[in-house]
Image (cartoon, rainbow, N blue to C red; front, side):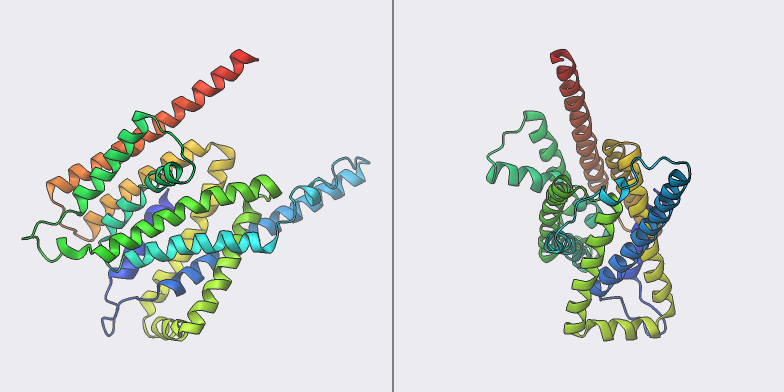
Length: 328
């Protein structure tokens, strides 16, 4: 929780700060993604190495005790995932992050964080258009609450100040594209896991490794690698912010995986959702964003819709489990 709160603060600081000595701003979104994914992959590799060492010690101990049952479990635990599947996952993951980071150049951080909380909208839209899926009136109510909240928050009266006009149409487009890509990442990851059963850290390592490699090739071709490196060498505070951003991202991903595996996906979703709410509050306080009363109402409306969504999902799961028990 603390990692991702700090992650949000660092994210805004990177894009909104005028770094000394010349007051330049960080403009290298793809390089930041490459570094972030590289550190994420390194963190996953460290966990995998520790798990492998622990598994070998366990196998040695069992062999000395004369119990060899399950020695090959660790080796056969996961199927071999084709590289192209990891590459596709990485591309959609990359696109979601790239559009999200670029959106920050065209809107305030509270607006971007609020918009990123609305992942249910593209999921439902794709369900209706592509799969002809039907949704309940309560689910449409949730989408209406979230959509109305984002619209109210981003609405700009003609006499608004320059700060209120910071959100642009291009920023909204980037945000929508990021949400659409977010809607593709999850289902594709689930398909890869269902077909090949990689462990969480194998998925985390390979996805981030591919994402980092692809992005480094792009930034090198664009010349952003050289310009971004020169910026970091000439702005020591930016070095610290980028390093801290990457480290808390990697730690946060590991804690998220731990929560999903050892607690529940619902608990993880509630944690990440409330984290976004408090990140917005911290951003408003720390960076002194001017927030109109109607925007406070919009924030409450969006998160009320998100909480209602989780309540409906929880009830649906309990009802389904109860129905299965009755059948059995």
